[in-house]
Image (tube, rainbow, N blue to C red; front, side, top):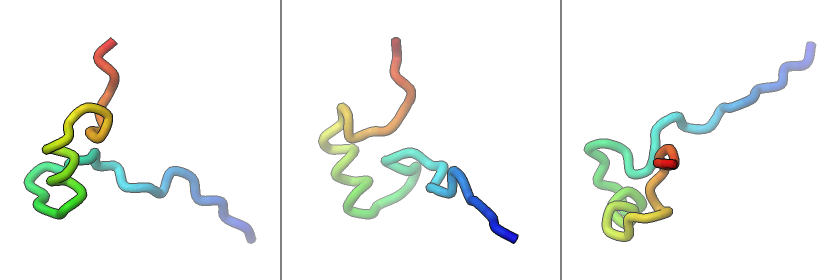
Length: 41
């Protein structure tokens, strides 16, 4: 039996709510394209 797992990445965006890791902090400081969210178009 073979299994193919699709879409196994984290579902949360960056920065994650209440997260204080360096990646999320840098994304908050830089803003713009560093923050994953739907395009406002």
